[in-house]
Image 1 (cartoon, rainbow, N blue to C red):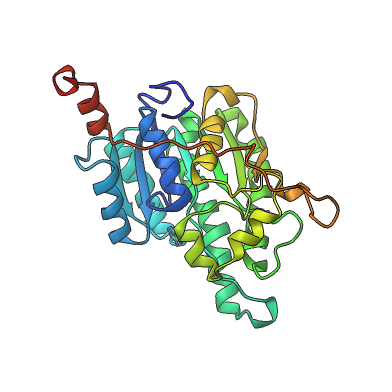
Image 2 (cartoon, rainbow, N blue to C red):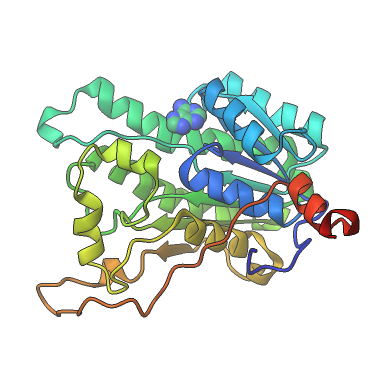
Length: 291
Ligand code: ADE
């Protein structure tokens, strides 16, 4: 079970981009398990269908919509559909993004623009439209998922530049929209968060083992450990936090094994739990089934 109180987000609605896989999927599962209704958006319909089947086959609490966040008309439509179908948008989680590894010298303008448009312009469009159509009148909370690019991001310079810009956009919006009751923060996962989607993206077998060795925790992070940080920032427990960026990296961005050796250890274990769809939870709670 999530560490947060059951029903914490009951009556609330969240919109999560890239919510079908990886970190977005873990965020969606934790929100659902805490009573939130969730709309997930992705460019890929098959991913959405699979996620729906696995997280909420009855379609009671999870809705899906195909959307390319680079396209203004599709973003406008995603926001208006969410309001129409779920009645409100309390939380926006901008998790959808993408990049490909390459040295800058090999990057085409087309490749550069694509990464900037997805990670920066897409986040801008999602924030602006959610604000225009809902949060300017009703308030709300936004969390932007960025990346560990604080010391530069070699081989990923395009996404490093875009995520750094989102970090700054987060601060500007925290000031501009405070009077409308909007809080906005970023979460920066370390490159040490394992998910099969990330593994496919990096296209290199031992990148996670190299990351693991260079983190004080001496283990990789889980997607659920990003989700719990996001749920905290969305929750009233973070009511006085806005314009902040929370690194979730096991201390990896602080540390270089060249300066200080840390022995292998298992003393900082992962936070993990098993998601059950609302139907499965009810079945388990039913007294007849328990006999
Ligand atoms: N995830 C990655 N790229 C995306 C895009 N352009 N739109 C929505 N989700 C995405």
